[in-house]
Image 1 (cartoon, helix red, strand yellow):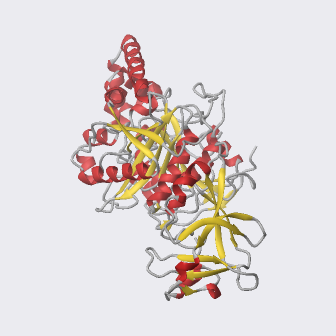
Image 2: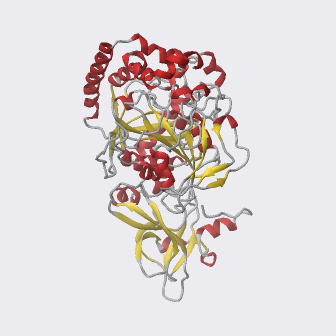
Image 3: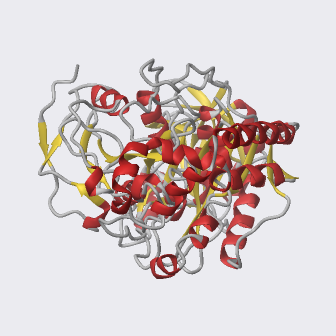
Length: 571
């Protein structure tokens, strides 16, 4: 049991409409644990004991005595709850504009929608107000807001995180989702939040895939793509596919018709009756208190019979069988998280049609029992974020995270709307450790330097910052683009210790990395200050003609800093 205390909460939050409950004191988690020191927000359809739960409907509000299971687990892991966030009412929508508490703006451009229904949770992560946030995802609510706000949205396999204490939208397919600035951060939260809970009728013990995808992987993409006239989104998706191919992926065009048919069933069949069943007693008594178009969507569930529902379930199972054939020969599916982006004004003028557009590539995922991860891909020329979603079979969550982290770091994007650089990639929990090669880098591959992406896109992680043994000299090589140093091993007494970073690279990707090393550089054995030997960059002596000896500076960062009045700092 967590011994709860309160913590001071930062003053005035950005975009107050992103929060429904923002108390002066946060609820502190355990003093130790995997998430100790982190702050998180909770979508206001998830219970936090002692705080009201509204589901963005004031008349519906109640104050629970106990935390939702997922909140309790996160508190026990050391995280602190900062407050509760706005949402599309009853988690019904993908725009972030369907709330009596106000439309939540986009974190990058406030004229545009944030995406929903987990709008507030995405916004407070993207603006750096919390370290992570909980959302829910039935039709894309944990993915669309992530893609539209330049953050990560992890939609776990169904039943992996308990939904006890969550106001249901469509209980059989609801998931608690995670928003974070980075994939590693989201995966870390998932590791703490997941666990079987017999008090949740849909909780499951799942067998998780624990081996990362190989150096070569095949990903399915829709053979026919729809961007609703948004050419910037089309070009951004083309760029993302090119990046995945550069990482060793092979794109496989697939007929997505079965998936699109499933997506249409969520609201266009008797399956919508799940929306009514979730809040039937309240809705029958207080229908007028529910805002449009949420009211009409939920009310439409009354028009179907029990036999209609059975027929819809059978139809869904048949489409699932057709969809299963798509997985033959591919490791995952890749789609735009959202095919376009709308202003708040346009969304409010046409709330049903434009909302439906945002869910073109999301609605089928939970119906077919897939895992998904929305990852930032680029900032479009108009300044709006664009994200892609990696979709895998049930239980592929860790695999998706490993590939997603490699992709995210290869983009060179910053975190959300904060402008902060991405931190060093971290190991993904739950994956078996693949064989690695320890590689020392000394120049343009250092963290924050131009070629560091060649490491991160191959899943390499930083092991340590250290120095070589005192038997090397460092030179700035002439005529190299980007500028590169040459490290030369010399006789005892003639060298000095040189700053290096040591990275662990998956063995499966090492060959493709070495193939990128141009002459006169090469990979050889390098001795560190502690006497250990690793693979590292060395230079041929003949290449030093015209080079500048920069050994006295102790490393490449110091040399780059010496060329500018602005020092280069270590990320």
